[in-house]
Image (cartoon, rainbow, N blue to C red):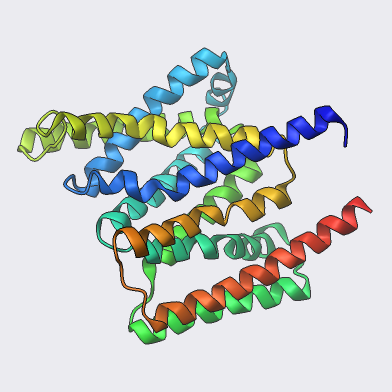
Length: 298
């Protein structure tokens, strides 16, 4: 490997680690806003993300979002993906502030295997034997948890499926991440602003009626959302997707550890068995990825 390629790889690795580590410690951030209703946190996250992304794109002189806005089909698709990512954000914030961080982390462990299933259903990709086995282990883990909890782990499944669908649609659209997210948040912003105006009129709005720290944290939800995505875009162009696929497990691992050791959420033998099955599936899936990667580079 040449020195230039090595430096590029190391830089990409740094961006990937920074991105997934920051996503992994998100519970610590949203927990600071536990006194604010999840709907209001989401609305502020949308509005301030749109504002911060617009500033970022102007600084970077990226005019792709203007090109996207001229195509009705692209705008329509980004409205759908915006609704998907908005719903994902809401459920995640709700999960963090209602002591479901462990369940949320399970969702992001399952997510890569849901991606595999969606690839089969919508992209007509063929599963290899190891990948089929990996998916079966994940299915067994969710089934076990459902049976023993007496309810469907909807937080895990919603986070996994909504993010997988979002990724699938964005992949098919083949759009740059930052301009795409800007349009998504801009499309959702009118509804978010109306909701914030409404709750303020009702006297239940928290912004500017709480501590300065709460107000600041709500505003910083914009850069906290946009910067890791910017890092991800930098990483994706510098290191192989197989490497990113491995590093992505940092995020749910950090979330799980925070849920267990910082917020002391329950992790009984039922959860342990369910996670064990999913982790086994992920190990099998990772082995299959590395096999494919080694075959391609021969």
